[in-house]
Image 1 (cartoon, one colour):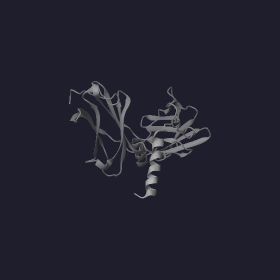
Image 2: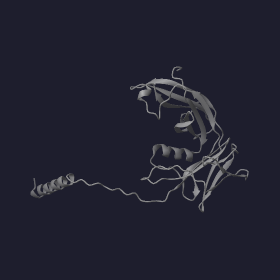
Image 3: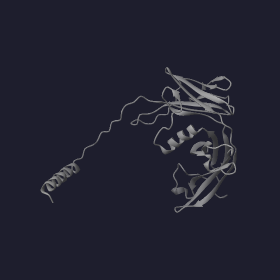
Image 4: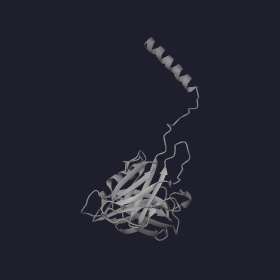
Length: 268
């Protein structure tokens, strides 16, 4: 070996030995930024509900207190009618007036001198045509899979949907979908739920006999689909859904289809 190379290798070895022998607690500091408003709004055929919160710094516990110091309304851009939302006991801005298919709506939020707006067209409703459980054998156990079937218009393409599952009224699972796998005007979505051996199942996934499982399906825009997909992957906040002041969140105007099933592991 060349003497210069040998000396260099020896020096590097000493440096590495020194570094490996040192221990120091690293103090990571996050850049302090002001909390960002988060607006989550929905308008269905049954009424409107909007939640306003703020993001939480990474080094603080998650806070979900709702903001109640804003002015919130929904403008029907098709008719020009504007609906003012009021605050309920849980801090949501609400209205019992539902939306109509084919109309385009604008959510308007005014707070602290900032204006936030988001537009959404209410697409045609779907119908949930089937919902059933079945067992499948996995290497570790039997797992109950839930198939939810719903209608899709075969005359249009690139239709997108948001499916949400609830367990006894509480959020359980959700998925963003599109019509790429539609067949004969129907989309079948299959999701894995609980394993048969409940002692080995996580609380977040377990289903017990008698649990009420509810599925809801709403049609969404491609932008909303991409927003949900980004949240599912977890690497970004997705496309910006509001204009005006900077905020996170979404506004969705969509008719909701719903179907309920009682979980009975002995019946399938």
